[in-house]
Structures are given as structure tokens and as C-alpha cells.
Amino acid sequence: MDNFINQWSESDFDNHIDKVLNKKVTVNTIEIAGDGNMNFTFRLKFEDGGSIIVKQSPPYCARFPDIPAPEARIISEFKYYELATKDEFLSDHSPALLGLDKENRIAYISDLGSATDFEYLYSQEKKLDNTTCQKLIKYLVSLHNLQIPEDVSFDNMDMRKLNHEYIFHLPFLADDYAIDLDTVTNGLEKVARQYKTDVELKEAANKLGELYFQKTRVLIHGDYYPMSWIETNKGLFVIDPEFAFMGLPEIDLGVFLAHMVMSKNFTLAYTTINEVYGDYDISLMAKICAVEVIRRITYVSQLPLLNSLSFKSELLSISVSVLKTGKIELYENINTISI
Image (cartoon, helix red, strand yellow):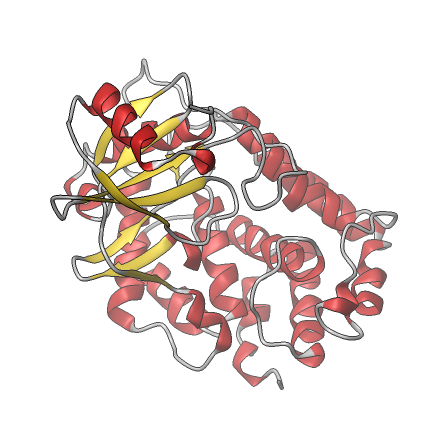
């Protein structure tokens, strides 16, 4: 039996589940579960009609094997869910933990059944509804107010360093050509190139990136965006917290808001944050929002945004100003941007 589950047979899973979960099963089918970039994730269907989700974190990104990634990230994800079970709201919106093989970085979690993420928001054909938006912010309220025992540490430093490079550093290098943006949207390469030579912008990103490593006792998800939210027959769930750590809560708020900006749900999202969340640093949230928009448009972590050069150009221009100034109000006219 190879170490990586993408090479396993049904009998390999039978034996491993027996060992880790102390449960006798017969796996009938193995299906890819979700479209995640980082991990091998499969749905195992049993002979008796049951099912389970299995995840493994290889020492590289599952979708991009040439990009190294910390293999212990699945252990951090499991730890996040363990902490989340201490709060009823978080527990109700998280899959259940079933077992963990630390040595091989393999985790078993409950199968939530048929599910859809929120990728559809990027097409702008359907808006985020108010009820769901409130739940998403209430989740962050519960998460950020979770009391973490003093003897618990959660730095997840290797994943933070990886994320830091792709958010605050690489997208702002003038000599980095990791992606030809014209293959994404014709004309985007020239638009993005002018910002990669903006010294003031680079300095703003570097300064913000330093705060990414600030220690707190606040647990954050670390990647709170539409592909980490799924809607099921059992309700809304938040998944894939492999980038979680104890840090500044504005990171989650800013990332959330950035994706609401890119899907033209800014007004609802910002209003809901102010109504539901409580106190936060508006300027810091604004800058995190801006840097997330910039890196999603100008670097390798592309999204299925509207393929419109005018839309992306205007969004970049606004976000550059927001990153430099911290003025969230610059996004208020986002809905008037032409497509």
C-alpha cells in the first residue's frame, strides 16, 4: 500500500479504516470530493450504504504537484475542528471528526452528502442572500470569540509562510512571470504590470504582510472565501481550515469582504459586518480586502471572475488605492463598475 491515498484501492481503504477507526467496512466506490487545490480528498461509499470523507495532505499541492506545501496541514485542520466543537454554533456548521492517522497525514470526517460551494457568486448572476450572509458573519463572531485554553498553541507557521508569499510578496514582484495574465483576460498583463512596479504599493503590501505574523489568542479560519463554504441538505457548513491559526481577526473579515467585492456583494457584506460582528479595525480590514483582490486578479490563485478587462482594471485601480490608504469607502461604488 503506497503512502498516498490517490493510489489506494478499495481494499487499502478497508484496511486503513479498520486500523484507524476500528471499524469493519467494505468500500465499494471511491469518488473525488470537491475541487480543492491543497489535499487529496475522496468520498468513500460503503457496501452497507454509508459513506465517509477522507483527506490527506501530501508535501505538495494536490492540484499543482510542482508547488511544495507543508504536509502537516491536515493536522492543523483537524486541530481547528477540535477547537470548533467547543462552540455549539461552530460545531453545527462543521463536519464531524472521525479519526486521524498523524503519521501518514490522513483524516476521516463525516460526509455531509450532496453539497455545493459558493463559486456561483463570481458569475454575478445570483446574489448572496441576506440570511446566508448573516450566518457567515455569525460564524466569524463565534470563531473569533472562542476561548482558547492558555496551554493551546496554534501557529501553523509553515502554512502561514506559504500563504504570506502568495498574498503579500510574489504578486508585487516586477520580475515575476509565474502566470501570463493575457491567457486569463486579454490585455490584463499590461494593466497588472504597472502596479508591479509601484514602489509605494509594494511597501504597503510588505508592511501589511508583517501584521500577518502578529500573535494573538484569536483563532481565525485563514481562508474564509466562497470555496470554503458549502450548502447541503443539512444546512451551511464551513470547511478547509488548513490555513487556520491564531492571528488578527481582520484577516478573516478582509478576505471575506474581498470576495464579496469581486462578486459585487460588497454593500450587503459590509452592512452585515457592521450590524452583526462588533468592534474591528476598519482600516486593517480594508487593506486585507484590497491585497486579496489584487493577488486574486494579478497572480496564480485565479478565480472564475467575469472575464472582463474593464471590470478587472477598475477593481484593481480601486484596490490599489484602498491598500495604500485603508479607506474602505472607496469600494462603495463597486456596483457601478461596467462589465
